[in-house]
Length: 302
Length: 302
Image 1: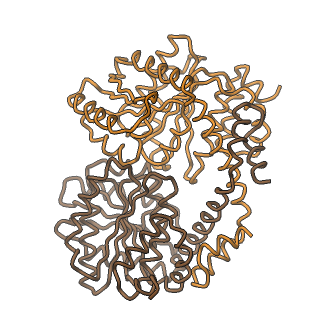
Image 2: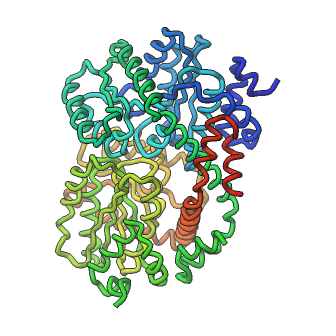
Image 3: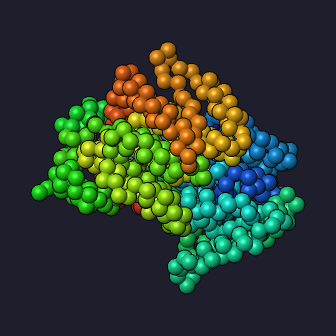
């Protein structure tokens, strides 16, 4: 039986093998890719991002529990654009998810960039396609930290949750990374701490700045204490409301279309990059001051 | 008189105008680019990165003072891949640099990404080329925050300084962003604080992990209190030692060559991207499950 068919029939090892093909950028991926696309479009892809320490893993774990209670299957893709040095801490995060290790309706996988630029942006859509084709109702894509890479990963989601915790000064950091702009829902976690009102007030004033059309989605704020599952039901129903709005308004379709368009272009550009063997000699001429980079780029294309 | 000639003759407004052309991605840039390359290669490009709050601006300011005392001219390019929300705080950082506002041997400029991906990676090498061609002896490239974009910007430097402060837990964050690997020199600033020994010990053990050849540069650690200019002379001489090593070992040449190669390829890819108008129709077919993204990418190239 074909790998995709086996994975779709619930064979976890076949699913894991497909994701390994994705992570390693295997050429075999091309063969399975056509089998996958025919079965995609069902899953609701929910992105979860925020600075380290705001409780992303705990929130993810609480979300899994709430979604499972509703009978929905859940896959988690933890995307980690980090350096090898931080392996330890991240492993710790993952371990907290082991609550769900025995539930066949839950699948959790980490994916690391292993340092090569653009690697994750290329691998994430493929990994999501695998999980989608395998029939998961909800896919939670979680990132570590806040930065441009995280913004790119969140571009793969239908609904983006940005987590903050009160009084940590995270808001500024998140703002600097440009993450506030991509939030569909703000989750103020650790809402039993001091400063929660300040954080929500700041968020509300930031949300009010945006210039939106009459039918646009206005980012919502949900307060949670994920360790005690407080606010998680409200979060699930807000996520559901965003999905309903996105489907109705056409936002879901246009996000997915745009996402695939970017993916196709990235794949095409990647292919071309392999053919750019002559760029070193041109670079030497620029370094020697004989050629400007624009003319060099044109020579490369010719 | 030509814009490049005027800027090279010391006309600050012509220099500012050139950098505005760079920042806005003006097509006029192509015309001046050939004039610029003939005059480049003199400046020593020093990158300065680290998490917010470690004292990047203060250290930059102290470095400017020390370099000026040696009679060297200095340009500062503060590259800011941030969101519009954080404009206020960053302006504050810049204001601290006003100590040097009246010194004609110092030129300071901020450059923001204004949200478009890849914009800074494209603009930074051009901006550095302008400053280099205008004869500055040292160019300090400073970034805000830590992340993949910062790593890319630091790829433009001949010598990379990574700043940390003791006891802030920044090391972990910096590690996650993959910034530790790119450091030529670690600067432990605020060395009058508790925890400086822990930070340097951690750094030393991380440095010892790396597998290096016999003539390789082993990242050095310099402790500073930038607000009091302590350790700045040692930092300047370490930077100088790195440059001498880089010139001798060929590292300087290979970094610069590789940097230009990447720039040429990025320009070529950018040009192609404009021609990818057909990608939306292909994306729709992938979304409908009729086509896999690899085949779509191939169609785009054909």
